[in-house]
Image (cartoon, rainbow, N blue to C red; front, side):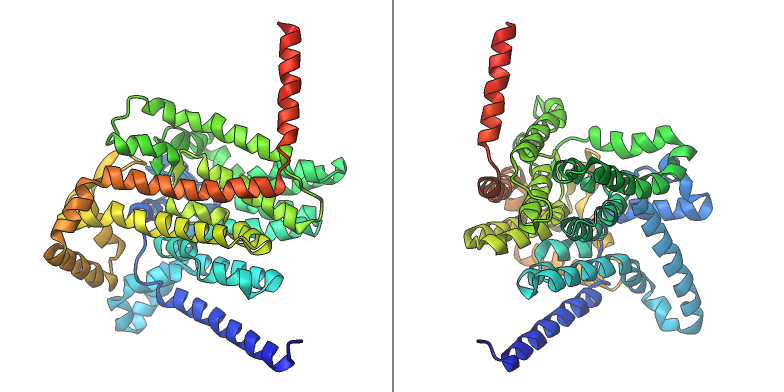
Length: 461
């Protein structure tokens, strides 16, 4: 039996580590953010200030998010700007570090949702699972780059726990808020239809899910329905394979001159749909059973990540809480290592290969989202604008002085190294995915259905 004193010491240690993680998040807030994306977000804020927040989809160069994402950014930006304009009048030191303070304040929604998700995991599962979140590579990369994914994941995870508790209306409402940020939680709706046996209860769930999506989106839709749908849907539909997507491997190997690139832009849809339908049909999931439901959530989000033509480093965060819970539950050390290596490769090593060598050599990089060349050095330095600018400039100078040949080698062979990194990353995720399928899916159902389909086809023809 574990003594009360040992339990107290353990809890004290966990609490100290939790506080350390929060303090580190706050302490690193000023360092950087991804300027390529931030420049788009700042354009939203300027449109909202000078015109109207409803004009974002009609006037902005890009607005590929659901409406709650720009609303959160614009609101945070305007509040932060107002506070610091007042503080500058009171204390001149604030003016000297204005951009650093802005970065810190602008991250408050991300900080709050990351901490809230971590607390939720800690309360429900203990430190064994929560530590993977608080000190997880994807969490920190997303936070430092400034992406909206932590907000969506918080509502998705909270909603998942309520779904397990059969609080379907509350769960649907939270997933609806998440969908108003990014589409991902909508993938859980067909699973809910399978799990909730009472049709009346499911309809209440569906109504609760729809309310936040409709209420938040409707003003923008009414203002300019064509451009909103075009910016949110067509923007993603028209993109070529990107970053960590397995469909990007042939693009990388051919230096984006792959002759069947148009096929790669749409082939992911049937590929994902086949995987998605197979999961929904074969998954052994039970109402109120957390273990089976969390595996289902992990498989659905992981399928959407792996079989998507656009896979950015932060996307693994969608599946991360469910994966961590499941892998800790089934005790798969090999799979934990696979996930750890995949997140290190996809969230750290690949982006470093992508940005640093061309920045050191002052060469351009191709941003696949636009299929345009940008100055890698300019993007990196602007991402660290403020006090962090000195750090990145010094780092790039040292790399140029002492590791020039290495950076030339990496830059000249990025197509091969990038394709290799993307391939290994996806193989590791597929390893985790296939093991979860074996663990929780009854694939014999798929075989039976295919045989029935085959017999019916033969009878017809």
